[in-house]
Figure 1 (cartoon, rainbow, N blue to C red):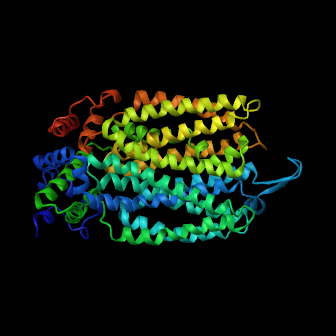
Figure 2: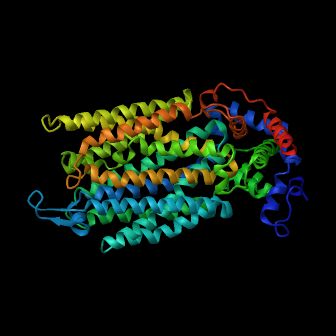
Figure 3: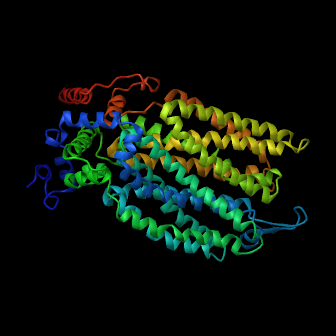
Length: 553
């Protein structure tokens, strides 16, 4: 029997938690101090380009998992863009004879309903995914939801009425919620310290790529077939091309070594580490597993509960959950609801349908470039400073949108000024808060409750998106409140409040190992002092000794 296998109790003879606890024994050879510190130092000191060469396999598998978000970005943007298509309006809308000489339109309450079921379904998905992944692992959880998504896409594509459409949309949003949680967590667990920022921000780029493809399809096909059923049905059918190739890729991918360590499967964790790096030697593999076991030991000893949702709200995990949920929530608080309703917003503001589609396509291209720009920014600046700068820029842009809307009746050219400011908003969002939120939620949580913390964070996002999604159609719809561009004042005010929170509560995580972050949170270091605080190699042992002493008293 190998040395590594000696640390594992036969899971057929032991209950689940006993199996995990045996692996996490602090006296285990796999929690060796020097080897764990050596792995941290190696990852931190390896340059970015050298890291890409060493971990190109991990980068590839992270790309595969993140590709599920291309589907989410594509699918979530379709329905809102269809509201302006005449064929869609006649199929799923109502006729208003007294408005502008008679028009077809999807009622604001139904637009709200579609938004609500999408947010609720996604919330169910993030919670379900966080529960499933701890039992099935990342691979089989993703494969399961990719499989059932095909049936849900068919329900939406061939829906004969609004009832079937709304049920199908709710069902599709459940796998989308799972993907939004697991793709970030998987990237943060298979990549080294030096690449975490790049590949977790790629999660956002995947979402942007999906949106860009969506707008390309709408501009290239839907706009040409405005009055035909295929104008909206063909874009829906394109979604069938995603699941099968992604399933094949994920089937052959390695499982997260962190998940395997938490489950007590150390030999498999070592094999996963081997598959994620290029030609690693035995020392490298052993050191990396030791680092994971050591971090898992620290978190297990300090945890108030064993990896449950409740533990996310106890001890230092409460602060980490607050930061994760608010960082993710800032995507909504900064005005994303207004941003993703671009076509409908521009039409309601007074622009033509064709111009609106072209503008939104340009915004999506701006988003792609912005996320790529974020990779340059995170190479030179910390997460906190980038995030804060982005919030300030977006707040300013939204308030200017509101001001321009006040004069657009007398000065029609102000409509193009509004469009320009939304481009500015998009540039700030996609280069700062949009991508960095995924990095922060992947780094902020403790490893033992990472999936649950990310699930709760995405849940916060969905609840916020639900509230704003309910209000948004009424704010910009001319048959409801009719605020149009003046909604910028509302979103700008919310963004200002969120900016204040970022300044006082968001810490810097750049260049920190998960062990170091555990120590900083356990010592309750203020957010603005995270970057300047030094963490010694023995800090975790000091904390454990203090913790054991406190328990004996």
